[in-house]
Image (cartoon, rainbow, N blue to C red):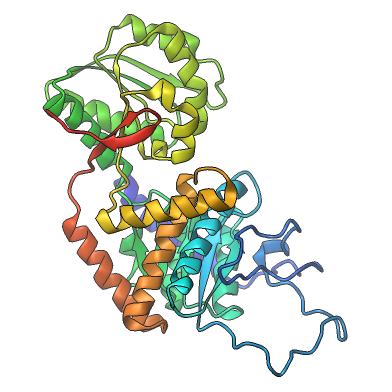
Length: 406
């Protein structure tokens, strides 16, 4: 049984168990869940009600009666499923920033009034289940975007598909997610294929056959290292050194020294940006001269602005976006810098792209769920038909540029 098929068997069971009648913690008094319409996209500092449930209705007399001349409500709602508490809260807020900026840009251009409704999944399966139920039953959103961590994203997708709520997930690397059902849409190159493409780039294009790897002992990076190694061997190359590091490692001097001693032509680094900030000093000190190949997480303006000087010449997978998307992201980055005074993270960019995808589908066929599902399905199929093997960009002067292969 493959890992993918095992996941497909296990996760529906998890979902069914989660769907059994259970006592959901009663919401504690607090502010209502935030809903914005193109407003600055930072959830309030107050802690949301437990389980992501909607906050209680204010007591009688605590709120003013609506004015008769109040502006009409939004024509549609987009739910944002992301972690807004816990260790991934910063990523969730960045993603929400991106969605809100997409909505603002569309409304400035004359688009329909759309509300953005955040829901905290707490990066937990049960949190995702409760959040999806609230977005559907209480908020009555037209669709949901987001999904960060594998397990919670699968649970959310199962629930959305059962409820008939379009769900676009473009952060979690779960290539089989779209197989759940017709209401689920997943974007992004599978990490395994990107790792294989890195090996093909090294051998076919650059004619570099002595490869080395530095990768984490656990998680996605280990999978990518395995795929890269297997593809290098299949193409006639050789792994001359391989170093795995434990979670929480902060000093990479010794493993990098051993890698440098093997004198590789190319060094594959399936490592997240936070860890790479710790690895780079060791690479500089040890003077390792191999060509560096990174992962999609490095395709971040913020990361490159901080570390690009030490990554000069490194190769990074493109985000798989077409020309129109790249132009839109250019406009988004300018707007984000103007508002926040810094480059956007890849999570903010992912939020912007997700928001843009949904808004374009709404403009084409309307915001009713069935119509939106049909339009998203057609657009997703068209993009997949145009997708080829991931292309790579090169780091030059702290930015990513086109990489002309020989």
